[in-house]
Length: 336
Ligand SMILES: [Zn+2]
Image (cartoon, rainbow, N blue to C red; front, side, top):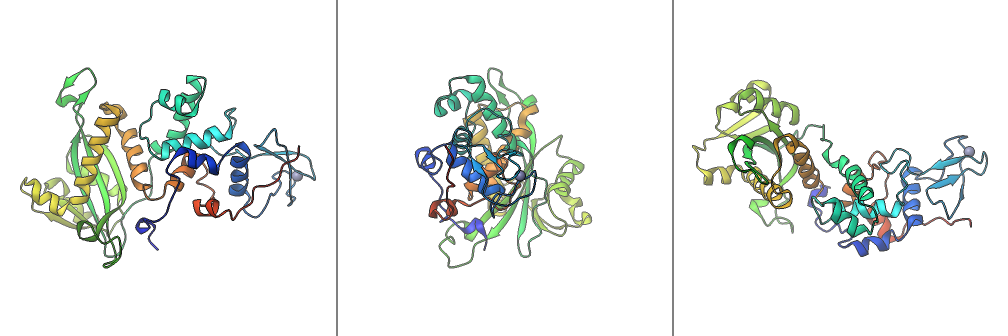
């Protein structure tokens, strides 16, 4: 099944709903325990399998019944060695993944009811670091599907400096174009075409070495690539791609017809950069492109975004939202 077609997968749409799922540190700890030991606690010190001691005042720690040593639930996650309560981390990750792109540390502090600005800033910075790390794997490579490659100028205005071309940067885009099954509920827009995975990158210029270098780094060989007829892309065929150049002649309507997905991506990107961040300087642009890409690629599965932000993505068996919602996993009991 293609998860991008599952429009019906629900996720809490408000922070209060989310807080009902994770009402306190104990609920968050129970989730972390399930993520790490799907089939029950295994002591990392002596290897014994079986129920550990749980201490209600220290929900982030389990104690082995045999060797009596402690195991921390946050090891290897973004929460490791933090004094901030687990529930604050969980609620913060939810806020960032759900409705508020580019939230400021001040807004974050207010929403989470934190007394110190520095705590809010540190939390926000750590959670965002998962978003600004670029995805490394190549997109494309699917039989019968193509990838649109395109480039645009972004920026030109930073706060207090007025307009100027010196701030404009070339941004390259590669995006998978998928096809919905005809006759399904999703087959209702753009001839059934929709965007799969996205990659965005800042380029030095619009030369062949920059543009084709970007394609080589982000798209699997053998993929059908659709671009406009700019000569910077003409080397793609010799590089092992199936290349189709649309004769555009500078006509934006034709471009919109043959490269509709990348045009929509650029339009959304520019709105996001302008509206949320009031312009971004060239040296920070790639980090913002990475955040935009992270949000775009995870737009249909916010639970995955949430898990990535908390640093739990390495655990492939993280319980899904459906698991939580159906109550199929039990919260463990605590000692006093
Ligand atoms: Zn042990």
